[in-house]
Image 1 (tube, rainbow, N blue to C red):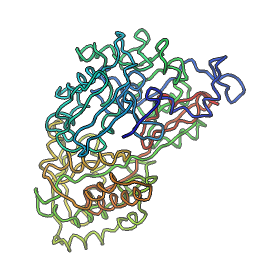
Image 2: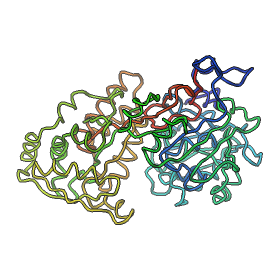
Image 3: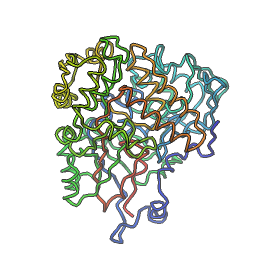
Amino acid sequence: MLRTTTARGIAALAVTATAALALTACTGGAEGASGGKADTDRLVIGVESDLAAFGYDPIRYGTGQRLLLEGLYDSLFVLDKDGKVVPDLVTDFQYNDDSTQLTLDLDTSVSFSDGSPLSADLVKQNLDARGNPDLSGYSNFASGGQNEISDVAVVDEDTVTLTFAAPQPGFESNLVLPAGAIVGPTGAADRGSLDSVPDGSGPLEIDADATVKGNSYVLVKKKDHPAAKDYPFDSYEIRPILDPQARVNAVISGDVDVANVAAETQQQVESAGVGLATNGGTVMNLIAFDKSGATAPQWGDPRVFQALSMAIDRKAYVEAVHPGEVPTANALPADNPGYLDDLEDEYAYDPEGAKKLLAEAGYPDGFSFDFTIGQGSQRDLEAIQPYWAAIGVTVNLKNATSTEESFAAVQTEPIGGPIPFTWTNPAGNVFGALFGFANFHNAQNPDIQAAAGALGAAKDDDARTTALQDLNRSIVDSGWLIPLFEQLAPWAYDASKIDEPTFPGAESFPLLASFQPAS
């Protein structure tokens, strides 16, 4: 059981002590680097996509839209400044002995747009919408989903119990924003109303007069909201700027104060004298769909996947296709305790070694297979294709004609991707992806399962480190993932306006409340 005494103050965790001292109650501003007061009127943030393309229903989005949603909505659980899952609307939670039930005690002091408080009935109403196909954030909770919730029961006015179709230790990590966001009674009764108006209990709200959908979203503080003080700027403008170069230009010119930029533009940002904060932690991988030889016998032999991994010159590939990113043969990122230097040596570019492995597996002349690609993966696979051809493996690239065709590849083809993995929630990656959506053929791997089990049972840092290393090793050696590169999340910023942005764990977006005026 985990208990929190400040469930409503989670956003404050993102505020550093230095920044807190810089904020002064008498002025409402902060001292800037020049000795004057830093501008805390409005923070303008440039982002790479429209964060509210489908309106303001948080359950229609993934973590990439968190920056806009987190001020508008409270969530059952959230990420703290270190990337750890902590309670927000939950004050206390407990699993039963076999982890098939999770009981949540709720903070009923918060209120929504119509003035009504949070209640167990409202949480049940939210989660009972998990069968709605439009609410993609609930898809894993629905019947047949990898994290199926079979029942939500109201215990009393501030307590609910979730019952799972199978044991779900660590399920709270699935209830962070956006999937854990709780929509108010109006929005929960009519999800369509959220297309134009959010209905959350968060400290910020949309300024409808200043917002132009798809162009600029302006968030302002709710009057008298107790958590509004955790947001140091008076208002926040989130501006979608789809073109990567345009985002860089906007920061350099001062048109925006901070923006996420492409890895290949880092040198330009630094040359212009603009601040640059970079976070790693996301590893891009090819992912095995057929791990048991269901589509062709070779895929039941891990040496085949190992050969494909060793055949790729990651350094040359990344320089050509993803300049600025970091080549890696580790499934876990470089700053994770499970990272293993040995894997970089063992899976270094070695086409002759790859040919030897294929021969040992019984395929000295190689083989051919199909690989469905989309617009986002075409350049990657066209770059990797010659490396595999050099060891006798012919990959036939097929352009997907529909989203349905892309999704169907998991059933009929051996490999997909590239796909990103962050490792703040290892259980989610293992059971939701490797043994979940990417395991249509129900393959088993005792080594991966044992490592994941040991990680869940780890009682101290040493045991956790050992389990993470075992997990990393078993995933890479099995070929269930073929790591390619660690993706960086660079943010350019005006150092005279804000302090260097910080990131919650391996997340690519800072917490909105963590943007602090220049100190």
